[in-house]
Length: 188
Image: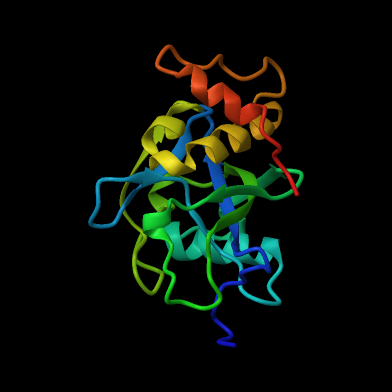
């Protein structure tokens, strides 16, 4: 197996870390996909024999140029959150077959200036722009099939992000169907 290949489990889910990076104003970072219209949180695969924490800091550095000294790890989801890829995105010619992702999400607090964010440190830039947005906004910005996992991750991390006064209520644009994501089994 290629040592740089991501780990795909026996059920076909690629192990992955997701990063919710929050600033002092309690806004979260979303990156614009390089050469595309989409927005998402930093995330990336976990390589075989790599710890989730090592993958977290490797991906953080590759995708947004930050190091462990630039952030404080506030916490993480209790376990893996999964999403399945739509059939048209499943590459059936590849082995092992990947049908989706299982993700461990981390909430990080930005400790350094935002000008430390860079997109040119990885082999191929994931992002070419970024924004700091209200806590729930990334759910609306991310590609449709990732929305339920974003809802679950943000919901689970909200008590850590807003320990004193609780998270903001879901915004007026929040469709009722996204509430169903909170009722689905979240973890393995």
